[in-house]
Every structure is written in C-alpha cells, then in structure tokens.
Amino acid sequence: MMDADIVEKVSRQVFAKYPEVANTRPSVQTVGAGGNSLLIYKGSGKTANGITIQRVVRVVVSETGKIIRMSSSK
View 1 (cartoon, rainbow, N blue to C red):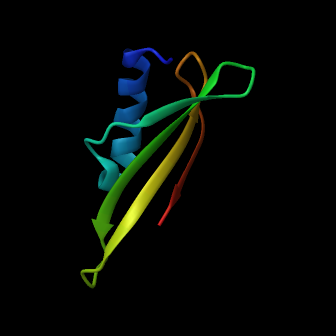
View 2 (cartoon, helix red, strand yellow):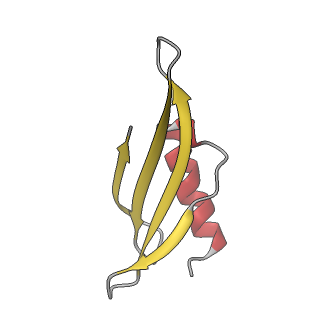
C-alpha cells in the first residue's frame, strides 16, 4: 500500500488539474513489479449546456511519489 502522505501529495496535483474529482478518495492498486501504484479517481462535472458527465482520472505513481502517467476519460 502507498504511504498516505504520497497519496495526499498526488491528490493535490490531480485536484488542481481536474477539479471535477476534487475531494474524492482514490482507489489504490499495485501495478507491475517496479512498485508502481495506480490511483483511480471518480467524479462528475457539468458541461456548458448543463449535462452531467462522469470523469475518471487514472494516475500511475512511482513508489517515491513521482507521477509517471496521468489520463482522464469523459
């Protein structure tokens, strides 16, 4: 499992870029043999015309807390 401080640090960066998932707790999974972790944030936002859309942000993080990859889906 990842250290809570690392998850908090990564979460602040994710929330700054994707405010739709702000204040959500990510699910954390271990991926690969290198000690990397996958954090998945789920939230929702509204489009300009008022339609609600789901946002999923996936972040691969090294064991030291460095963000390796970040992607989102709408």
